[in-house]
Image (cartoon, rainbow, N blue to C red; front, side):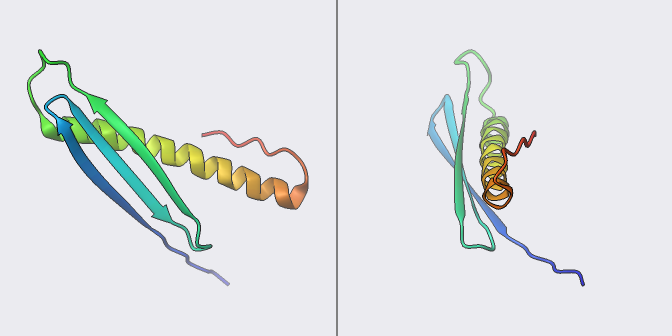
Length: 90
């Protein structure tokens, strides 16, 4: 029997100033766990202002952090059951 479980990912962007964009991401898993991550992007003052690019970089960094945290959580869950170290790679 196939069981389908879903979760939603929420992401918000904050333009701190003309050279700094932040992204906050949050996912709530079906077991009730909430994982939050953060990413930032710095624009060199000599580069043209492109808000979208800063958001993309900040989002990628936040999602990369989220990915690492989810792998760590999964590894911990595996170790609780197997009582052996889990070696998960991205």
